[in-house]
Structures are given as structure tokens and as C-alpha cells.
Length: 332
Ligand code: TRP
Image 1 (cartoon, rainbow, N blue to C red):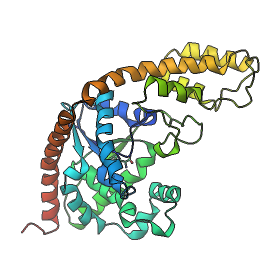
Image 2 (image 1 turned 120 degrees about the vertical axis):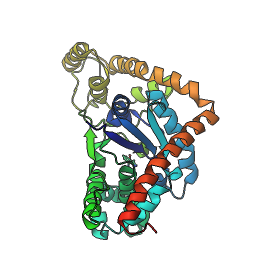
Image 3 (image 1 turned 90 degrees about the vertical axis):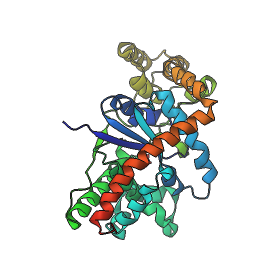
Image 4 (image 1 turned 90 degrees about the horizontal axis):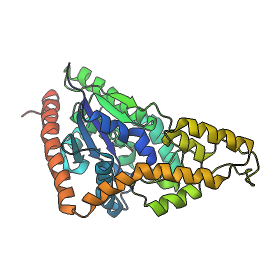
């Protein structure tokens, strides 16, 4: 059987958080042993909604790389690349743009939601509407067959596959390959405030790089049950973020079940369950902090990883691009 090829990526607009960890980072660490994996730091995509703040994107390239190394994405096993260092992707994007209608681009549900969230209204940058097309170039350049993502990225894969089918049909070739999403079975992790998902811009995230102090403060401020005022009061477990997180991260399921019963009966204070969650999360994050510290001071080595990965990515993307150009009669 042919080996699966994986392409995943993140916009470097901030450090990665526990939602990313549950969403796709764990999967990537697993899959890098079985598959050929490309992990992209999507700086050009990040600029589509941060073009006024290039310094922010620049800074977060190394933050995201450190997060990758901290969770165990191994540059010996995975090719870690920077999108802007692979110019072939942008040539592919230009060709693909012909295959997508303006209306189709505007119908992408994730793009629609983001346009609303950002309040772009009639001032939506064209580059932003087109970013799924650029993402299709990311995926197809490496002929990825699997893309581990969170569910908000499903419309991107659907749109990429539409482009693949249109291209192959139109030019009567078998050059581009359709990709499949790999969704984690775990539910999306809500933010510490209990509202919607954990997000960089929502101020409700716990970052993989948070120090023990910062982590403790965030957990102590987590949303629990607003009606649980006195320790003796019965408390609610549903919608209580401390229990939601314990369900996800605490492996002692029996003990968590007992704590829940106790909390519901009354007599168990928020501080006790929060302290437990702090311990559980510290156990997860501490090895990451140590790994991060090992690499953090060697900028040259970090840039070396990115340059080596991007060089390898350029070679592969160039092969696909040559096939695409030939299919479009551009092989002069
Ligand atoms: N759009 C993704 C995000 O916002 C990042 C990304 C860019 C990506 N290119 C990709 C993800 C290719 C998977 C495959 O998180």
C-alpha cells in the first residue's frame, strides 16, 4: 500500500493552546511515525488577516515552531516548513483562482463566519476570501492524502477537493490528488470562560507555553457554576469548565466521577477542583516547558530547521508545479 502523505499547518498569529493540542497536535505526533508528514507554518495565510501587523506574524513563527518541538513533532520525522519560503505555492494559487467562482469563495462557511467575526463587511480583503484557494495549493502541492484538522477546517478540504476534481477534469489529467480530513474524535475544547471554543483572539486560552504561575491564575479564574457560592451548596457539573477540562485531561476517570458526585451533593469547593486541574495540566505542560527551554535560546538552530524543511518542501512542490504547468500548456 502506498504511504499516506500528510499536510497540516497553523497560522502563526499566536502561540498554540490546549485546543490545538487536543485538535490536531496529538494526531500529528502519532502520524509522523506512519506517514510522510509536512507541517506548515502558514505565514502568508496569517497575513491575509494581519497584513497590517507583519511583525506579529514574524514573531510567532518561532513561537509556533517551539510549540511543535515541545509537543514532540520531530524535524527528523516531519518536514516543518514556512509557507512563504515555498514560492511554488503561490504560483499554484494563481492558477487555481481561475477554477473557483467569486460566489463559491464567498459561500465557504468558515470564511463567512470569519468575515462576520472580524466585522469586515464590505471591506473584506480579496486575499482573505481567497485564502482557501491558497490552502488548496498547500494541500495539493505535496499531494497530501490526509489532513488532520479541527472541524472548522472541513470546508477548506472540501473546497480543495473541488479544485482537484475541476483541474483534473478540465485538463484531462490525473495530476492532483484529493485529500481526506482526519478529525480527532474528541470534542472541541471550550475556552476557560465557557464560551464557544478556545481561541487566540477570545482571551480564553491556556497556551502550551504558559508558565506554572500563569496557568494557575487562568485555572483559578475559570468559569464554574455561578450559583455555587458556598462550599456546602450543591453545584452544577454541566457547563462547569473545571469538570469539562478534567474530563478531557485527567486520566483518573473514577476519581473525577467521584468528585463530580461530591460537587453535585454539595460540600466540595471550587478551589479544591481547580487545584486538581492545575496539577493535571502542569503534568502535561511541564515536559513541554522543558523541551521548549532546550531549544528556545538557539535561534540559529531553529532557523536551520525551518530552512532545511522549506528546501525539501520546495523540491516536492516544484515537481507538482511542473506537472500543473504542463497540464495547462505552460511547459515551453
Ligand atoms: N487554515 C489553517 C488554520 O487556520 C491553517 C492552514 C494553512 C492549514 N494551510 C493549511 C491547515 C493546510 C491544514 C492544511 O488553522
